[in-house]
Image (cartoon, rainbow, N blue to C red; front, top):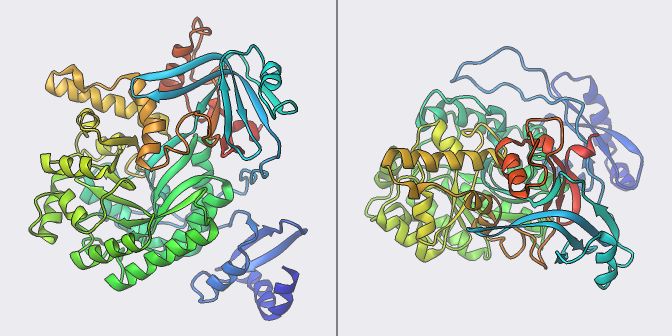
Amino acid sequence: MRDVLLQHPAKVRDWREAAIQPDRLTLSAQFYNEAFFSLLIYNPATSENSEVTGKMRCLSLSMFRGRARAGSVDDSASPPPYTVSDARAAVPAPKTSGHRVFFGRIIHSKSLKEVEILPQASLGVDDKGRIRFLDGSVASAAEACAKHAGFAHAETVTLKPLQFLFPGLIDTHMHAPQYPNLALGMEGDLKEWCENWTDPMEASYADTSKAHRVYREMVQKELENGSTTVAYNSSIHPAATNVLADVCLEFGQRAVIGKLCILVGSTHGNWEASAEQSITDEAQVVRHIRAIDPAGELVMPCIQPRAGSYVPPHLMAGLGDLCRSSEPVRVQAHMCETPLEVQNMHALHAGFASYADMYDHHGLMGPRTILAHCIHLTERDMQVMAARRVGVAHNANSNTCLTDGWCRVRTLLDRGIKVGLGTDCSAGYSVSILNAMRQASNVSRHLTIHTGDPAWKLAFEELVYLATMGGAEVCALDHKVGNFEVGKAFDALLVDVGLDDNVNTNGFEHDDMALLKKWVFMGDDRSIRKVWVGGRLVAGKDLKA
């Protein structure tokens, strides 16, 4: 890196001179193998920003400092500058080498009808972060080490009486650029919320420095809440989308990421110049993600039309061509969120029998497709969805907040359609999948209230499945994550329900299912002490203790 700096003395002078400019940002960066070095980056509007970013990719970047928010804004105003505190969580240390054995209560989902609870079991993780054994026949970690080949000298962790291991939670639908808008704009419906809150906020990511500030905070918060895998919607900006991918890779979060494609139907300048530019930018993001994580071990690209009502036929066709030429690649899109949105899709794409037929016609339906919402489906929609083996992101919180309607999860499951849970920030006001589980439970019960049919209600075992294995299936990652099957990656949470928080366990300390239910319905990030992704410790309250 010293050679790079010596080759660009003019840039170093400019960086230093920029320190006295109030409209520029100061960035502190740490070299992996050298001492701290103070860097000052150009105003993000300059054309040299991307060159600098490319040269600094080997850095583990600290938080940007932004200007303070000045005053409040009304619904239609430009979003305020986003600022962050200097007191940020430290970047997790790289994964240590060696095998590990955990002993204690281990819980995971085996099917929609079965949650397996092992009160005293051992789980072995190798030095590559893969699960080598799950053994309920041993009485201690030491016995497990002696029994299983290769683990004689493994590090051992014995859980406390009110702790348990649980698979990492999977968020199948989250809008990264909307993170600053959490809890705002729920007074209107979907159309009003998009026009007054979403469009201006998403458009503001033309300032790539904002992506650095927001996404670094957001990814850490997602991990602290136990979301080890997230299917992110980004904005229309390729540079900001690349930042999101870089941040997820740095902090160790699994992520499905694509640049949002919008050409019509949006406001506040939140649209792209042309179909050709949209496709070019999407392809660039796919290349970038594959360059930083060639094996797709953590970060995976996707093709991302916002919805049929925002992407006209010529752009949708181009995205389908890109999907076919970029195999294997995932697809994320919205579908059948409100009756008006369905009506607008048919007006833009005339002649299709259903929303699903339109996506299918353009080659965007398949086992790697994630469709958000799917509330106002027709019989034909479900036929195509089942045939193409797509997955549905059920966003109960946002669907309720914006009064979109009730997703009939029971019908989807009965048709063999994959379903996972999404937070849908910021129409959903919480980034926690625990909250998504509660909201999904409530929506299913509202359907029972509405219809008088108890069959709509989701059982607790089904909720656990949707939050873990169901989400893995929707993201086409069920071969890799979702539960503690041998051979899968160790994406896991160490949960403690014996703390001074909202979870009261008095009288139920030895009831394993009761402890799990209390965590799901009463717990929050305070209960999540450690978070691992692929065996790497990436987050958790114990890291801040």
